[in-house]
Image 1 (cartoon, rainbow, N blue to C red):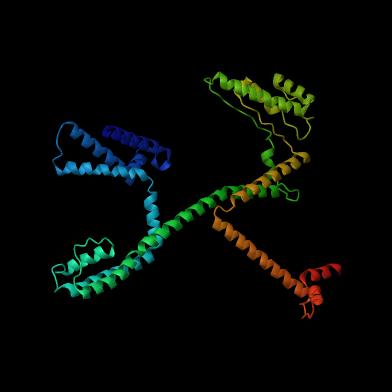
Image 2 (tube, rainbow, N blue to C red):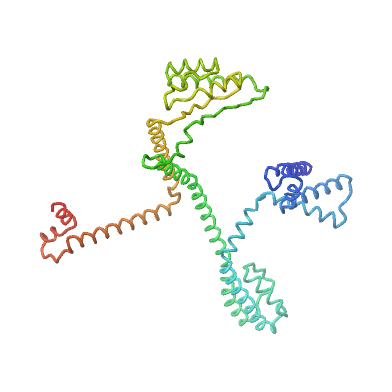
Length: 417
């Protein structure tokens, strides 16, 4: 089992050192050396070397007599650090302690003051009555064992005065020494909740960015917005040529798949363009010349680049699907682009609304309370505007006057005017 662990950790260290070059700062020999100087890498290397030393010495039948070999054997305990390689546990603990440092310092300071004073007064009360409290160090040992709620029982006060002092100071000091545990526990709970909120917020960032992008594209495609750049991505350049160089080692299966997709795409394009453009495409692919290129209807795809591509590449198996783009957009094309962008905007808005849904019951309650508060504010604003418009209702004496001056009656009176 020991040999298996050594081989596993050794291979893991070598693979990590080799794969570290995928990041730019760890490329080359200097980058590998920088990676090897990381604390977790140093620990890995130490564990591997210590395990190899222990196995090599133990395989010869020698006894670990020297303290150096025993210390090397102790380094194998560092394998437990592999459980948390990224150090997330220590970072979480450090962040919680740093956030609540003021509370921890205050409670520990008051607790140590109570420990020192309680030990001193117990020593004064017990120094002449027995052998347990012969010095202040014995009293301090009793205080530490008491306030940490261990209670060995080897040193206890014997006199009534010592017991009264010990009881009063123990209750006071133990309560303050127990506070750091509660502070750290609440800090961990708040930190975990904060991380969950951050994860939920991070999920909203891509959807929000997509929503903003779709909204801007809808605005840029509006007829009142004079922008030529928003249409350039849908227009093919005049000097556009497609070059796709595939190696001769391409398998027959991939060629057949590309050919099938090419034929399927061409059939769909030909069926949509009509029989006239079909004949023009066949003549262009055979002769390499553009037939009636000047008489081409604006908004239709140009076949000049397709013909040149077929002559240059030599075989339709050597290039992928040709993307047909018009050289000039008509009003119909622009209207279709606006519709597609509007649909994308609606889809992005729905995804953003789904991403913003609360994930916790407290968030739901908070959202409902906020909505209720906003509704009450709007109702009060409506009441204020009604009072400014038709005046405040006067004092009414009977039920008939009360029915006349209700909110519905006043709104109906405004509508009938």
